[in-house]
Image 1: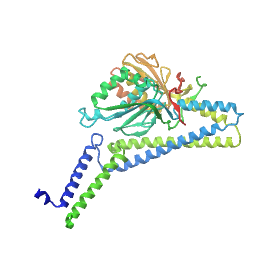
Image 2: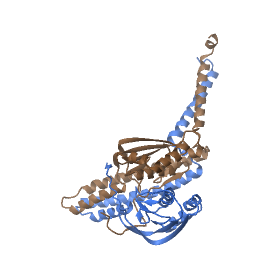
Image 3: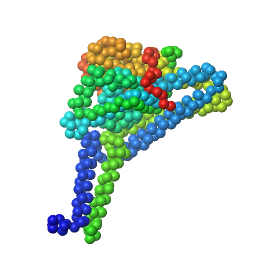
Image 4: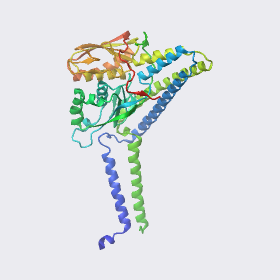
Length: 245
Length: 225
């Protein structure tokens, strides 16, 4: 006790500070695996450029959604005599909803797919979520009867591709970092239909389990799936016949 | 208490390093959101991808603004805008898959053993390469349509595919062909995984892709405008 009392308080302060310092250094080092393998400073401008471009993309998408909303409002301002236009407006609205250009809400599921914990036992590369894993989950949800799906707020629409980019993924050309949240709207039986499918069971047993990927879900009464905010301009195809009834 | 200036300097130095580390840790985790994990090569690829996509989005914004201005003008003059509405309707229906469409593109015949996941990987690459409409054995691909099944049991929309089937895609024939057949591309990757699988890619000036037979209107989802 006498010896403890004799330690000057500044030494105690310094010891505590050094302890925290050591903890932070250890945390920094452990957070660099397995996804962080590159530490060179020359990549910093590239990262800044990506962040800047992603910010621009978010702003452009918000602008597109805003203009589409203005369209909806203008199209609704029709004189009572314009019966043909009103009918066309209704068809247009239906087409936009079917195309995924309108946000939807309804009962459904939310999945969270995450990398394996470091040290889970599986090889590091196998423990990272890939674009193929996300695609499989999306496909299984479609097969189970989902009627709208998004991945980290990117709506899965007709031209959507889900690609690997390094250790992360691109959806609708938007850069998405893990963890991945896959939302789906469907019937109350969506989860039952999904989990009874042999191909989903196979995915969980052969891929998720052995690799240590973390897959969790929630069944919700109200899931919101955002509108597709990308381009619907086509360059090569032309419509030839009236729409199917 | 800190009695000497040496002691004060020691504590101040440690506190400074501590602060820098805390900021670095937070910055790395929150701001870059995983970008720090990417190699310079991947970041460059990502930048190219984002630039292309942003250019397309700017074009979309410009087109929408023109249409909005024209519609606003028509409304203010009390004129009909049915011509523009009709054009919009056609464009959206063609894009979403509820209209028959034609255009240049490619026809790809796959012959041999492949499972549903392999075909889905191929279709994903077709979308990535810029195809605007895709059909597999006459079934238009729209959200919800999935090619599934083990080798020899492939089906799409309850239609069996057999061991030889054709995929058609509208888009630039040169770009689509180049993307699929490049060294290390999807055809090379699938050929390595599915031995004996053969691909035949034919660029065509005009192909027709049918409309989907699905009703794309949601039953459980409510539009929230």
